[in-house]
Length: 322
Image 1 (cartoon, rainbow, N blue to C red):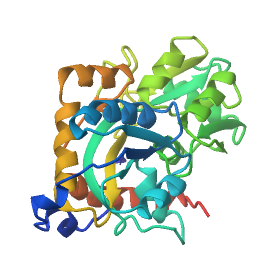
Image 2 (image 1 turned 60 degrees about the vertical axis):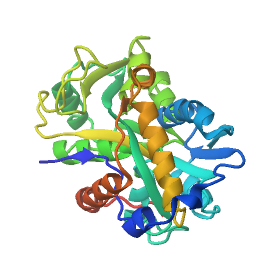
Image 3 (image 1 turned 180 degrees about the vertical axis):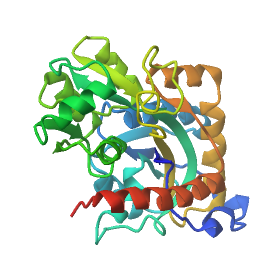
């Protein structure tokens, strides 16, 4: 079954999480502002990071600020080199751990330089087209694209992001030829589709449906295996003729490797409790994100499993980002 379920996908040393560090290691934490590094401002990860930052700050007793960095390498590198004391965190999606599968060299090693805290959010994506494209279904789009090989453009954020891999899976399963136009982040790539700079994009559901309602882009399908109430009336890719097509964007919170286990567990407890609150779940749904929340070890296990799955997709598509 073809799948792009984007669990955070890397093996992290469990000893860093459950190594028996005494709870005393977290005494006095935090003693200054906590910084959460995340992606470009305005995207789903950024909005979710801000909801989490605002929610955990009272319990931590210190300000929690969001620091936007475009690109998984830049964001990941800054946190990998930060002091492992819990005052610099990373909230990011699959780009962080999938990029090493597409690059021969990286400034950080996701298997060694980060400790997972929790998988926080998940959302399917949409296949959207600009209104100028004369199609109203996935089947019609495939036929239209095949009759114009290489003439349609699709936008993506950074190489290896969920929208990029969803497009590559779409190309692989249909045999169509499209030209990729890269942008610095999800908001920019979505704006390009809205403006007609490109014809096709795979945005996450929340921001995507906001623009669909403006009438400037059309939603042809949702990338989850089942229909989602976040996109009422939009069929799945499976029901549109591509059985097994699945692409779920997910993002979680990380700390630098070496952060005391007690600090990791404190942050896990605070974040999971927060995102499971009904009012916070509602806020996340308002930006098109579903709250998840799991243990550091569960997050690590899911990451390891998904690296294997997505490694094949990336290899088969020949995706490189040098």
